[in-house]
Amino acid sequence: MMLYHLSRNPELEKNDGHYYFAEILNEYLSRKILDFDNIVTLETAKNFLLELGADPKYPDFIATAMRVLADSETGFGKMGILEEVHSDKKSATFELHSYWVEPLVGAYIIYDLWKDGQTTMEISSIINDKYNIGRIFLMDQDAIMETLEEIKALGLIDINLTAGLNQITKSSKYTKEDILDMMIEQA
Image (cartoon, rainbow, N blue to C red; front, side):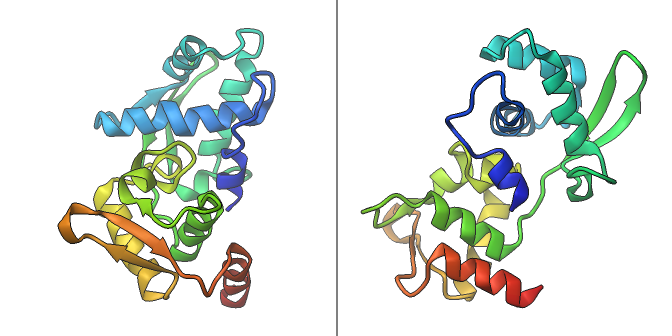
């Protein structure tokens, strides 16, 4: 949940450290994994984000974001998305991995991204849209479908694959706050 909220805010300024987490996960790493390229370097991350429009005055934010994603003691490294395989004073190389999000966390994110008046959500949006679980956790279609089945088993969504619809509907019985309560109960 913390990683989602860290990388979620679309109103971030380019001189805000959270912007770099959002762009690294939603743009750089998600594109790399889609290209079946699981080796990334600090230098290629910097170059990518600078080309994307990151402020060149803040290159340390890029390095910090990458290291926090890889740091297993104080960062998100325990999730295994980035594993540092080589480091020296000038560069670092990381191996990139998908993370299969827990069903309740996935359900919370889906509910959080649900727009007022929206009746369905395309599964392709869950896989591909910025800030959604496919992009943030680098999950492919198979991982998303398995997670959606687990969320469905909890009664939080319905999945409709008939006639090529490939969409979900959320349960009217629950809110994202209810899902948070479920997470607390399971802890």
